[in-house]
Length: 102
Image (cartoon, rainbow, N blue to C red):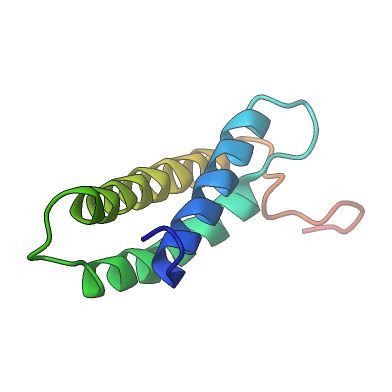
């Protein structure tokens, strides 16, 4: 079950989420643009996982699909929160281009 496309998407978005959470307190450039982009990509991944859910299956296959859906939802919410909090920073580092006015 982890081999199909929604499963691979789940693993990659989980890796991006862990990276963004780890970089959240770093003194260098924040990971907010990556977090926002990944949060946007989470929406079609969740829809793909729901569309390919094996609704009638039980056991390991049903558990894997449910776990993937839960990880995707948690990752999407976490990434969206990281991105929104970074947008609300006072220094405006997300929207300003260094060296250019305005």
